[in-house]
Length: 129
Image 1 (cartoon, rainbow, N blue to C red):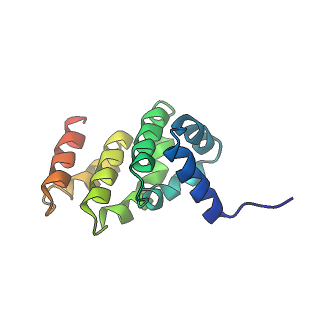
Image 2: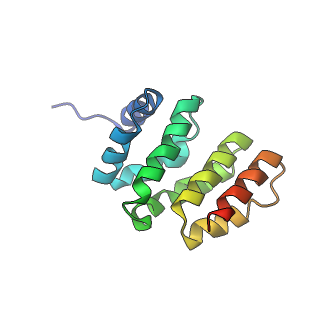
Image 3: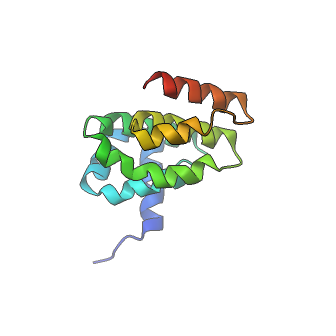
């Protein structure tokens, strides 16, 4: 039996999100929570539907419990350091969905981001608290 590498699996996840199968990916993340640690990396995908799909996945997983989705926080910390304001904003949005105290602290650190759209995402995320 051939094992699928993490790199190949990340590509498959991105492809499924691109095709609109966020429900399948949410189910996959529930079964294997370690995949949540790939969130920041998956956000780097240039395809809009992949990034949107991740947001949908987290909204779906939110009902499962914050403890599960909080596993994505370390990878989102890296995304907050991205040179791309788009990626930083997406990371802020997902942190807002996660909704833990740690996520809120990270969002607060982005309040003075150089990019106005990131700052707007911060305001939206904080409004959810």
